[in-house]
Amino acid sequence: MNILLLEPYLTGSRAAWAEGYAACSGHRVDILSLPGRHWKWRMHGGAVALAKQFLEREGPGDLLLASGMLDLTTFLALIRDRSAGLKTVLYFHENQLTYPWSPRDGDPAARRDLHYGFINYVSALAADRVLFNSEYHRREFLGVLPGFLKAFPDARGLENCEAIRRKSRVLPLGLDLRRFDAHRPVHDTPKDLEPPLILWNHRWEYDKNPEDFFRALFTLQEEGVDFRLAVLGESFQEQPAVFAEARKRLEGCIVHFGFADTFEQYSGWLWRADVLPVTAIHDFFGVSVVEAMYCHCHPLLPKRLAYPEHIPEPFRDDFFYRDQSDLLRRLKRLLLDPRLVQRGGTRRFVEGYDWSVLGPVYDALFDDIARDGRDQPASNGFLCI
Image (cartoon, rainbow, N blue to C red; front, side):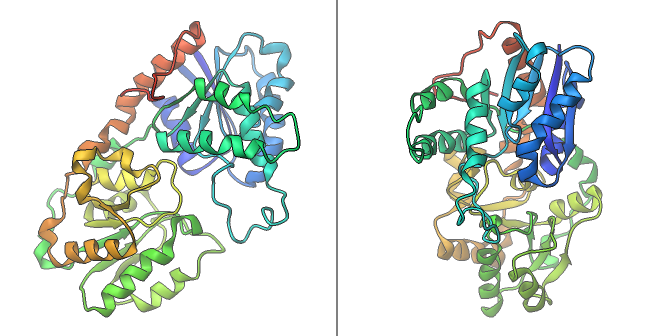
């Protein structure tokens, strides 16, 4: 089977997902893409550019797999002479109905933001199947959709919410986790010879809530708790001011501060890290969290967003916190007694996201959809792996 994967914003984890599936699939997966920049323009104009790429190809393929950044309705209209009977699948890495807006973006206050969510809505309506990377993501999107449509004056089409729900399901994000194994230290440094290493490995942006992360570390420093800190992740020209503040206030604790230039360097820090406190206000899946867990780093997670899906219920007490004060209490306890850090205890929870496991699951699902469409979501919307 020939799958055409449509990604108008090919960068970062989206590129890793597209290229990872293309590499592991038993099907032929061809990627039609645009560079990952100017996201608002990609949601408007990406469909036109990718339709041109599609029409310049020989043969339409057997199935279209589009990311949620694509205006699928415009794309299908432009290729209509060659798309009859072609099955379409929409995969949501994120959505613009519930993604938190940057405080630097003036569009929400000026009420110029609704059309991005509307593109997601009509694309889901047009697709044969709608896939979400987590149950949290699926539930949140479907939960806010009726209210979103009620903001319009009439002909709201509220019945379409149920139609989208019926054809939606969860297909977890596939990751190349096994590549971390090549960079695992042969001999672990004895943990009693140096203070525990705290890790930040997320983007340096507002939705990852670095203020609460560093606020906890400032408090621990003031209380005389000993720790080391590695701050990784992609930074941008504009970034929350707390990063500059942290670099000064925590200078004596910092062992790395900035983007890791190579994957070898990045994975090396994940293997060395002891604790990953997470304070994000938004995460539809949590790639950086899963990667750290795979490398035996002990997470401290808020009991919300997609994070509870990564750890089975009987094991959650050791890894989740209720609020900022509970995070501080749990983090301090781990730092003062590193024997409590469960190194390796979480790898078993996330290794099923590796492409070696999920690749065949993706292939079987898409084969069913392309062949005859008899695939039906389970009653709870999950795709079992």
